Length: 300
Image 1 (spheres, rainbow, N blue to C red):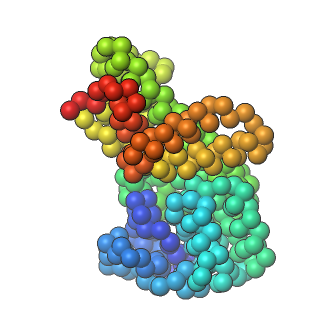
Image 2 (cartoon, rainbow, N blue to C red):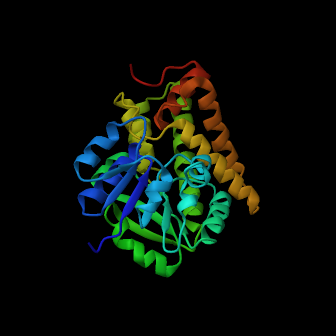
């Protein structure tokens, strides 16, 4: 077997597709058991092995993938009881695919490096649909040698494997990417609300934007799909978007760089969460605008 042993923590919407592609493309796969066993069943049927702790997972793997929500969860997987850190050793590679804080990543990288383990930040772009299809984008923060060695593994579930730069640059680029995406989404929801309050045809607004340079994939997923009574075009929750923008503003302020737009986008997401839409997808920013303006926007 010339393929490295892979381990996986975090079989959620994105993680399941990644793990499925690894095991079905011939990479020996070990997964950590979870209370929700449904995402495990087809992986075990395809040949994956199940363990109970992250320590066991690391012992049985050459490369461990972490696909969890953010910095606190990554810290728990690595430093918590039964964590990866207790099995850190020379040659082990840990790949953090979450959207996390670069400063936290740096501290974890330094700790694991003391025992010869490399921590690679490699956050993802695209959606669970592309994860299942093996067509994600990934931005990898690693030295040249490590990146080259990981390319065949990452290509098992990615269409575009991008070397973002040295360690830390993957998470930094992802936060900037998510800031731009959420800036478009929040401004789209606000524009729809303004148009609705003014009595302008929302379909005409979508037609005009779709025909010009302002158009984007995010606009189509939020506005055009909303007019079709579909608020699931961008399958990313508002609570996670709020977290990512908090990380982005922390990053900008630490440099320091101006974060006026970032703070505005962040507070718009905070507001949507306070209005009760945290577990809804991004297009529910439009529903938050309905509550704020008292004007119907979503066709019902």
